[in-house]
Length: 285
Image 1 (cartoon, rainbow, N blue to C red):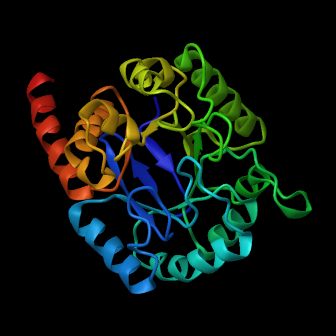
Image 2 (spheres, helix red, strand yellow):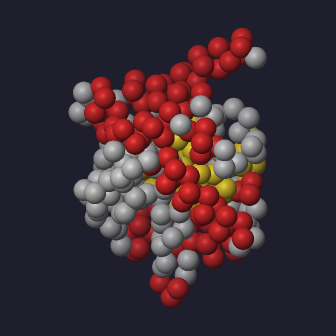
């Protein structure tokens, strides 16, 4: 298993879990929509996450919650680019959560480090532009490939059937192999099983319990459990903002099972939880 992640400007050490702080600059995200869609609020939140111990900032301008409406290319660029121009000077790896090849290209051209794509580079843009061609041309950027069943508008209306672990494993293997065949170095790739993206509660927890089967593919894993509805289902907590304890628990469990990037809303509590886990790890060898 590789112990680092090559990105545009940084080689990220994955010998210990890295916390990726979520910066949503959209009015309609499931958890914090509208809180950081102004420049000053977004920058203040990014600064706060860095103080709390975030090792990566993951910025997105289009909600991919179940039932979310697509965002136009022009609006996504208008939301993202001013912030990218500012944040690339902050000396922290900057990840862009997008599936549009044109957005990937514009952000990477400005100096962003990572493309985090819920569609795993399967969507084609205008004039035949593809995510694969963009990340291939930007020869050092990091890439996160995620599994999603169907699409945001329909994924929870007809979730996956059967054994999700095997299906997710097969999909991610195929997408990673495709990139490698296009000349992308393996150390630029991490995988995400896509918790909550077209899966039942039971399937989501099976992916956590059997995470080692996906790790066996050989790439690092990003775990994205933060405030997800499955946590609400098992705890009875309806409000996503009140799922901090459940989110930290899931993140630490994912780390204990080998995940090396933890994508979270609540950076400080997650860092604290990891410190407790790491103290135990030091005593167990």
